[in-house]
Length: 408
Image 1: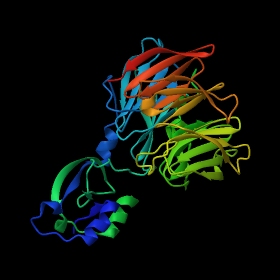
Image 2: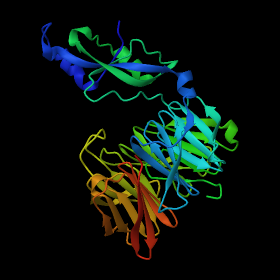
Image 3: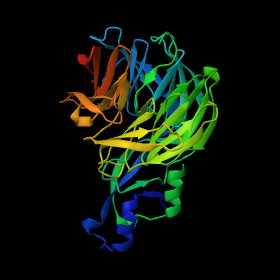
Image 4: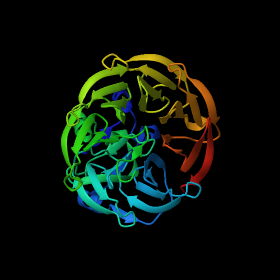
C-alpha cells in the first residue's frame, strides 16, 4: 500500500467528496520525492569558488568577513575589509543549511540533520574538522506550491534525505488515506565569537553552542571543537524560530510567544517564563529591561497582525507587554546604543530612538528597499534583503548608506 503524506486541509474534502472515475475535478497533484543517500548528502559539503546567490537568508559577521546564508544551499563568504567594495571570496556548499555561528576560528553550521564544524583560520583553505550526526530533525525539502500529497512509498527514512520532487497527477481513488503513515512521515573579532542577526537559531556563550530547532533547545559542548558533542536536547515549545543571548539568559522567539531561559548554569538552561502573544513569526532582541519582539502575519504563522511589541522583562518570571506599534511586514531587528533598527519587509529599514522605551520615536526611514535582517556592529550597520547586502555608517546622530552589494 502506498504511504502518502496528507495535507490536513484535504482530509475533510476527501472524506465528504464522491467523484466519478473520469472527472477532472477528481485529480490532485502528487509530489514524489527525489532522494539522496545520507552518505552522499554528507559528502556533498564542499568549498567552492564564489557564485551567484539563489535566495539570501541570515547574515553573520566575524572579523572583516560577512557570511550570508543561501537558503538550503550554503554560505557565501565576503571579504569586507573595504566596506565600499566588498568582495565574494568563497562559497561554502552546505546543503540544507540555515544557520552558522563562529568562535575562535571555528565555524559551526547545520547540514540537514547534522552539525558540522569547520576550521576557518585560513579563509582560503577551509576544512571540515568534525561532524555530529543526526542531532537535528531531518526536515524534508518543502514540496512545490499546490501539492496535495507527498508519496513516501519508496522513501527510506533511515538512510535517505529528500532533495527535490517530481510532480504527478493522480485521481483521488488512487490515494489511500493512512493516518499511521501520516504520523510516521512527520516523526521522523581577533578570533573570538562572531555576531549573528536576530533571525538566528544559533548562539554561542563561552564554550557552549545553543541551537533552537522547531521544538527543541539543544546544548553543545564546543570546548574542543574537533570533539564537539551534544550535551542535551530538550523540548522547548511549538514552532521555535529564533534565539537571542543577553546577560545570562536566552530569549526564544516562537510562533506563539517568547520563552525566557536562564543560563546561569550554561550547560543546563532552565526555563524561567513564557509570554504568549498573538500567533505570529517573531525574532527577539533585548537591551536592559526590555525585549523588542516583531510579530509578522500573512503567512504560515496563521494570522495578519504585523507589529512590534515592547516587553518589560524587569521581572523575568513575569514579563509583560508594555506597548505595541503597528508595522507592515516586520522581520529582523537590532539595537545599537539608543537606536533600534527594524527590517519592515518591503517598507524598508526603520530607525527608532529607544531612550524613552516603551515610548519609541521613529527618527529615520530607508524606504524603497526590501529588508530581511540587520546586524548593528560598533562602526557600521549590516543589512541583507532581496539578495543585496547593504552597509551603513553611524555619524553622530545620522545613519548613512556606505554601499549596496548585489549578491546575484
